[in-house]
Amino acid sequence: MAAEGKTIDALSQFELTHAFGPIGAAVNFTQSNAHMLVASVVIVLVMIMGMAPRAVVPGRFQALAETFYEFVENLVIGQVGHEGKRYFPFVFALFMFVLFGNVLGLFPYAFTYTSHIAVTFGLAFLVFLVTTIVALALHGKKFFGYFFPEGAPLWLAPIIVPVEVVSYLSRPISLSVRLFANMVAGHVLLKVFATFVVLLGGLGIVGPLLAVLPLSVNVLLVGFELLVAFLQAYVFAILTSIYLHDAVHLH
Amino acid sequence: MEIVLAAKAIGAGIAVLALFGVGLALGNIFSTLIASVARNPASRDTVFPIGILGFALTEAVALFALLIAFLILFT
Image 1 (tube, rainbow over the protein chains, first blue to last red):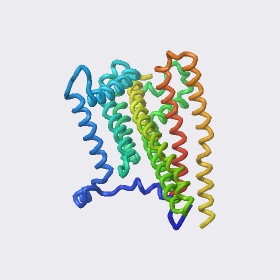
Image 2: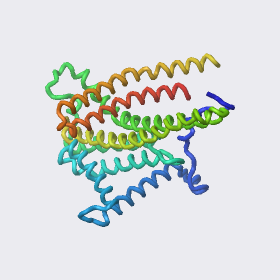
Image 3: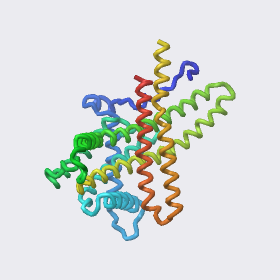
Image 4: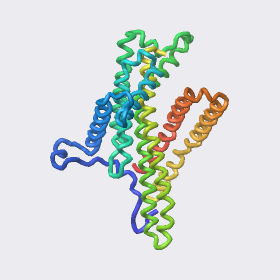
C-alpha cells in the first residue's frame, strides 16, 4: 500500500487537540468541546428562529423546527404512549444533539464528537440513569419484577433473572458502542478512500485517471454517511423511547 | 516481528467473519420488509420504522466485529 513511504493513516483524525490556543490548553478545552458548543448554538438558533414568527403558513426555519418537533413527538408518543409526552424534551434534546453532532462531523475539517466512546457512553449512561430512576419513581419495588416475567415457572428463576439483569445492564454499552462504532467506521472508510485518491494520483500518467474511481466512491460514501448520521440519531432516540416505554409500563 | 503482523492480519480477518451472519440477517430483514409492503401497501408507514430499527440493530453487530478487527490491527 505504501507508495513513496506514504501509508494509510485512518485513525489520526480522531485525535483530540486543544482549541482556542493557550486559553483552551489551560482548561483542556478540546476541538471536540468546541464542536459540541457549535452544535448546541446551531440547535438553539434554529429553534429560536423557527419559533419566533409563529406564522400559520410556516417559512423555512419554522418548517424546519416544526419538522424536527413533530418527528420526535410522533416517535415518542408512538413508542411510549401519551404518558410519554412528559419525557419528550429529554428525547428531543438527545436526538438533536446526536443528529447535529453526526452531521457537523461530515463537513471538511470538522470533528465528529460522537466518534468518541466517552461522549456516546456519557449520553447512553444518562439515558440508563433516567430510565431506571423513572421506573423506580413510578413503580417502586415492583420495578424489580421486571427481571422476572410473570407466569414463568419459578424453578427457571436462577436462569431468567441473571439473563435479564445482564441484558438490562448492557443497554448503555450497546447504545453507546452502536453510535460510536458507526461514526468511526464511516469516517475511517472516507479517509481510506481519500488516501487511495492521493496514492493513485502520484502514480505517473495513468494514476490520476484511475484516481477518479475512489473519488467517485467517496462522493457516494458522503451521501451514505449523511443517511447513517440521520439514521443513528433516529435509532438513538427510538431506543431511548423503547427503554422509557419499559420504564413506564414495565413490559 | 513479521509473524506477529501476519497473525494480526489473520486475526482481524477472522474477526470480521461475523459479517457472514450480518449479511444473511440484513438480506432477511429487507426481503421480509419488501414482501410485507408488497402484500399490504397500506402497512408501509407502520412496518418501515420497525425494519429500519432492525437494520440498525443488525448493523451494530457488524460494527462490533469491525471494532474488534481494528483493535487487533492497531493495538
